Image (cartoon, rainbow, N blue to C red; front, side):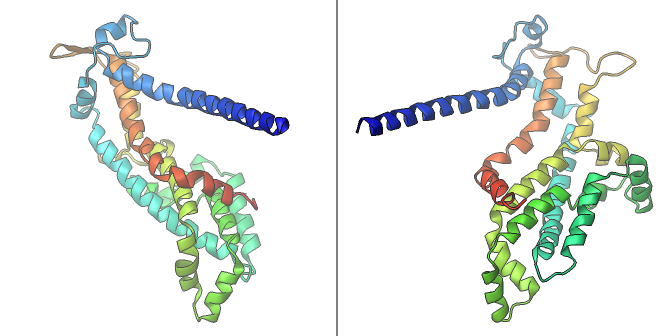
Length: 297
């Protein structure tokens, strides 16, 4: 009895320590986001004096309004472009990745192993930016929004995770569907797809974050201002001009003073917020999807 009580006491102590550590880790992760938001919401005068350590001083939201309303930055168009690229890029990538993973996970497909090897080789060895630019230019992807959707439709890492997940689905389900007269397409859509929301949510989140945060590809291939992403807009806001040494001058809106720190922080927060809002909707699938997709990896 005494031993049982000691074990329960040790278990409670472990749970308390574990919960405390997780809360501290969560606070460490959330702190940068909150700090950027509080800096963006502070008045520029106490901010320039170094009086803002965490909580905002002279709370205001004019910095966000100024960033959105200033045509020089074109933040609204950048957000819209990034949203469109992320939405259609993620849907297209999920479609192609899932179909490919389904084919490569079927044992009756005799060429699955060497095709998977080709995918892995392209993942490990990268030809570089110049050969990529030559190929993309030949395919008319320069200054074409499709460059954000089509070339990245299959990520080998995400393909491996999806393929491993599909390999874990019992073969008996497929055999039963074949006996009932189902073809491959019907097996994939009516048997495997209803069992795959976890892996689709997980891999879809990876794709969405990757496309939203993409900077190099749009910076190289998207030259027209109307096609630029929010990351390119953020670069024009946050990185200072070489000639003047500053992106902004201090701005007075009503009784509020806005300086560089206000406006840069506001731009950064605006860029981070949309993709952060995605996580609460897929969080319940996220851990399970990663574990199921890595059991046989």
